[in-house]
Amino acid sequence: MPSILIVDDERSMREFLQILLEKDGHSVSVAAEGEDALKQIEKQEFDLVISDIRMPGISGLDMLARLKASRPDLPVIMITAFASPEDAVTAMKDGAFDYITKPFKIDEIKKVIRSATSRKVASRTGQESEKHFSRIIGRSPEMVRIFDLIKRIAPTPANVLIYGESGTGKELVAKAIHNLSGDKDAPFVPITCSAIPENLLESELFGHVKGSFTGAIANKDGLFQLADGGTAFLDEIGELTPIIQTKLLRVLQEREFMPVGSTRTHKVNVRIIAATNRDLQEEIRQGRFREDLYYRLAVVPIRVPPLRERKDDVPLLVAHFLEKYSKLLGKDVQTISSYGLKVLMDYDFPGNVRELENIIERGVALESSNIILPDNLKVRHRTQAGSDRKAPLFVAAEDEEELFERGMEDVLTSLEKKIIQYALNRGGNSKMKAAELLKISFRSLRYKTKKYEID
Image 1: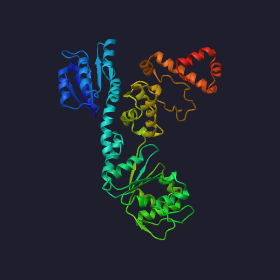
Image 2: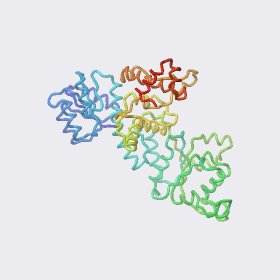
Image 3: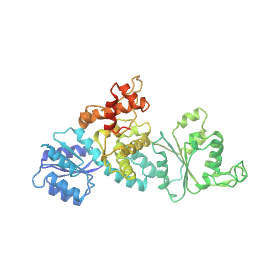
Image 4: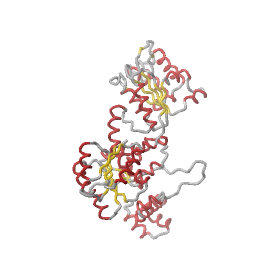
């Protein structure tokens, strides 16, 4: 958990925040004034500073300016009981992550803390993950259990079956197992079983000899020959035909195979990691998957949970993808607004981590400031299960929290832009037709499209 330094001359406030944050598992240090805080920051690594603005000696704003000169990457949240527009502007201009007035709601400050620390923690977690776990990002109990299991099974030669929904990161788990094994320098050869035509899959897996079929103009090594001494990763294993299942079973039992068109068997020493998004137990009951093959593959089964079951990892993943795509796209998007994060935390992510990555990449590409706002988070609005109610056609603000965070002008502007764009789409991109649909004059629509830069 992130380490936090609380700086406040009020003892009651220091103790309140310390108890609150330690209860959530944070490592918390305290300082009664700015000089002490700066000394502690020189000696210890912190992920976040929460500081009062008005304190004896060095003020919170002076401390912020000195901190940002020496530690620009350290997020600082300013709190005050004497809110003023001048202080707020100065704090944000000098690099404060956020500015909160007392009294504040507990949920409010927890949300801001989570957002402020996620990027720094994600960077550290990402470095550790890159070293050990192939960039699998997560600190939820579900992912901690998977990390522990990976470390325990990686040194063994046991075959592994990874199952979970599409987009959960099954191949990353397979790579992590390989990278922590004793054969990490040997080949890791992946193949997606559903991506290869049925008549070519046998050749891709086992290889073929010259002249074995039309187009076989030379001998070709298959997956198992290429992965000899290392790991073969069979993704979407549930798509294999009965014939291929039988031949794969022989590889698992006898450690040998026969290339297409050959009369000679080849011995092979390869670890097999398979993955599927299907229920293979149900496939067995339906007679579509061999039970003996299943038990050979699933010596160690690993379930990768969908993102909706590990929402604690969303802020960490968001921060990781923000850093990744800010670099790739040449942007300076540093964080996501608190309401933007709430939108994501309330979303079920049917496409899992892959969908979240896509949302953040698009948000970074569209954002013109250094913070992603809710308007640039394109999440799918779905009807509730068991309900015939359709999702709203236009959503400018989800609730009063977003309305008051963004302000009426921004919300109404966003709504007007969405309505105009929708009418243009319905009217075949004709401004005349769109104006008729909206029952406004052509001149008025032309003015608005120019004002909002709608092409």
